[in-house]
Image (cartoon, rainbow, N blue to C red):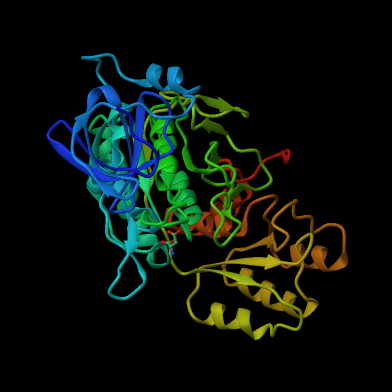
Length: 429
Ligand code: ASP
């Protein structure tokens, strides 16, 4: 007897019961969408399957089923199964909230963060075949509520887990501000093991949710030899591969698409093929064990990222200078410009030992303030060219640098150097 897509089934595995509708599955495997909205996948020969409802009729009976699909990826999927008794790598999931941990609250109609790492593990059983997981809750919040203090709590937890023997770390995180957290961790931790941030654009109870695929790809990165802080998210709108982005070079570039994350001014470190589990890298990266663990916490939150717009009042800068801000990032136009009216304020800031970094609203390309008079005058006023750094990364770097030193000259020197892959000599892409 065979099951078909759309049938409702009960699956028992290792004493746990899962119920849901059969999704498109390859031969020998069954994927169901559970009531929680999460997808769960199983090898049919390892579970007991009970048919509950077939094409709308309520049925009973036990059997092991076969899917109707071709099963081309079957071999690869089987190759990923651990040998019995084989020791799996240890991965810690640090959960912070976001859509990946959310479902619709039918009382309010809003998406809220409700799942912990343990819930995610229970809902995606394939994960248990990739690594030996441990879950730890850091926060349960949408990422718009993240702040530099929470970045440090998170970094501290990741370091503790690495010291305790974790072979890799996964951080489940809201997508909105994931790039800020990824940059913060990149500056704070020299990691000897992978630290993969992952999120989802659609909550688990939506049919098009990207949570399970992103999570599985992140798990594969966590056990790989890419010992960097990375963001692992859908590479296209299909369920074909995830991209692995360097934590200081990535940005959310779309409000809702599943492939919203892009590496800017750089190539992704590589891709994870969702069907085969294979990782292909495209640039040089820091390998597992290549460096020893170093933790450099400290963040100065009184820094601001200010977008220049035509006609904007220079008094805006004066506000920050007079309110105790310790560093400013300007998101200028084109090659990195602000109105000439702003230049005396840049001078005022740097005279007050407040570093000013210039980045571009273009995002793509490199700052060059040597071409036009405005740029040259900005440099004379003490502004630093941000090279090809992203504005958000520049802000996080500034916070971190000012959390490390009170010396203005040392801060300027650190801000001008590449510290975590945020400035590249040659812009790839
Ligand atoms: N606002 C949510 C967050 O960043 C969106 C998401 O997770 O995708 O937490």
